[in-house]
Image 1 (cartoon, rainbow, N blue to C red):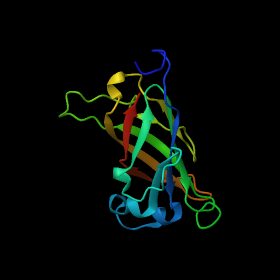
Image 2: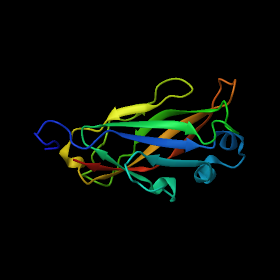
Image 3: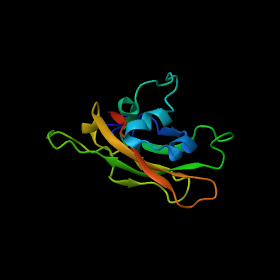
Length: 166
C-alpha cells in the first residue's frame, strides 16, 4: 500500500527546478557534456533542504508514489545577463537498467515537456509499491531560447536521480 487508507498517495507533490546560465551555456564553444555542471544547477522544493553543491548527476530528489512531479527550467539571471532568454524542458526520459531484473519505471517514458519557449514537464509517479526505496537515474533534456529567436540552442542533457517513497 502506498497511502494511509490503501488507495490515497501519501507524501506530497514535488517541483524540481533546473536553473541554467542560459546566455553563457548557449554561447559556450566546449561540448555541452563537458561543461553542463558549470552552467546548470538543480534543486527541488523539499522543505529545509540545504543548497545542493554536488554534481548534477549525483543530485537526488525524493518523490512520492502516486504523487505529481513537475520539472521546471528557469534562467539563472532573468533580470541581468539572461534577460529575455528562456529554458524549456523538452523531455524527461527514464533510463532502464537492463542488468537489473527488479528495475521498475517511476513514470511513463519518455515524458514530453509542454511545447513552447518555457515548457515544463509534469507527471504522476507510478502507483507501484515496488518503487519504495528504489533509485532511478533519468535524463532531463532541455532547450535554450535567446531573446527574439525562435530557433533554440540545444538540446542539452543532464542525468539526476529520483528516490521513491511511499
